[in-house]
Every structure is written in structure tokens, then in C-alpha cells.
Image (tube, rainbow, N blue to C red; front, side):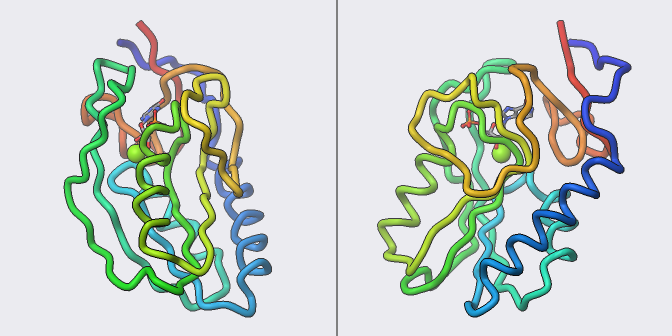
Length: 173
Ligand code: IMP
Ligand code: MG
């Protein structure tokens, strides 16, 4: 796998879009107490930036999942490595993840949270690969729609590499 030299989404483009998402989320939850559940590890850079653009007090929580990836394709099995949250019942929950790809991960997380009776549940993802969807799950807030390519950077990795890039690039065989 080789990192493509072209930038798919630049640092400036990401920053501008996160500004917009932050404003939208702030407006939508103005009268509420928002609880964000961030999916580790890929969404850490996104949540760090998004949090600073949301003009509300937020209860920030985490779930650590791992999909068993066969190179760049999800096996469909999602493992809950750790859960760092409590008290979902009656809360307004926003799940924040890096990419909505096949939907297998967010489908299982959504089912799990819904079983705990939140008052509301929405999903926010930085990237959406619509053409790869297997499970019926859509995000309420989407940063960018991207083609069916494996991407890295801005928190997203390939085999543990490239998470620290400030922009998003494609990695190819
Ligand atoms: P899904 O279960 O297939 O929707 O995949 C969800 C998870 O797989 C995402 O939260 C990412 O962590 C990871 N993933 C999917 N596509 C990519 C990619 O292009 N680059 C890096 N990670 C990815
Ligand atoms: Mg992930």
C-alpha cells in the first residue's frame, strides 16, 4: 500500500467544514444538554477540533471499538474493546466517528445505545463512503462525502500508520 502524494482533503478544508458543523450542532442542541460519544481511536483528531467549535457545554464520553480489518476491508465483526460511558437513559446523544463506510460499526453501536433508552440519538461523521454501505445506517451530520478509496490522516490509520497527518490522503496498492 502506498500513500498517494495528492491531498484528498486539505487541512484548511477540514477546518472550514468543522467550523460549519460546529455551528450547526450548537444551533440544533441550543436548548439541550448534549452528550457526545466519540468512537476511538480514529475520531480523536476530529472530536478534538469539533469540540472547540461547538458553543455548548458537553458531556464527552468514549467507546473503543476495533473492526477486524482484512487489509482495507471490514470483516463485519466489531469488537467493543472498552466502554467509557454511563447514564445514557434520557440523554441527548450524538455519536461522533471518523468514517461511515459499510455501516457495520455504527449499526452495532447505534443498536447498543438505543437499547439504553436515550432521549434522542444522532450520528456525526467526518467522512461518508456511501457506495460501500451494507447496513442501513445514515449520519445526521456529514463532513465530506468521499469516493470508495481507503483514506488516512487526520486520525485515520492504515495498520497504525499515518494517523498524525494534518490532511487526508488516499492510500493505494
Ligand atoms: P464500517 O464499520 O465499515 O462502517 O467502518 C467503520 C470504521 O472502519 C471507521 O470508523 C474507521 O475506523 C474504519 N475505516 C473505514 N474506512 C476507512 C478508511 O478509508 N480509512 C481508515 N479507516 C477506515
Ligand atoms: Mg473507527
